[in-house]
Length: 141
Image 1 (cartoon, one colour):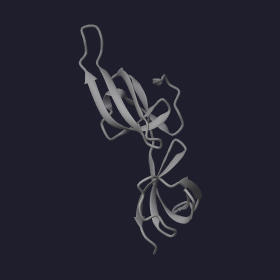
Image 2 (cartoon, helix red, strand yellow):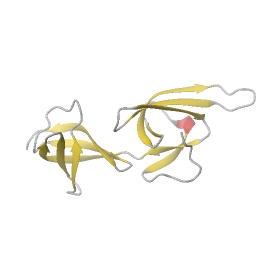
Image 3 (cartoon, one colour):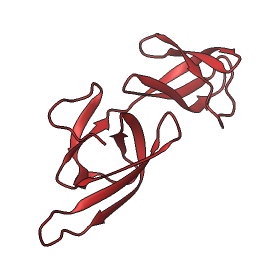
């Protein structure tokens, strides 16, 4: 885990490790992760409290963890949730159009998504330049 010393990754902001909570997002080894567990050790006689943070990758379902002093800074990805319309399904890829910018994206079809068909609306997530379909919002209009 590389702790931040002032250089910042694009699409992230810095927060104290001690302010992180389960359900929030954090960058671990350059991968945006959702925090699933945090345990904080009490400060000792000669040292500060340390936090052990466990996260699951937002785009790749990998388990990552790090240990750091609660007073240190860590990068947190800026998550952008957007709506799009499915234009076409091509094998294991889906083409969607953003409903605000009209930009088209080709994304892999995530596992466990039901009701994905041309014309339906979806919510997708963008973080640090990566995209993922989160859920299907509605059918054809």
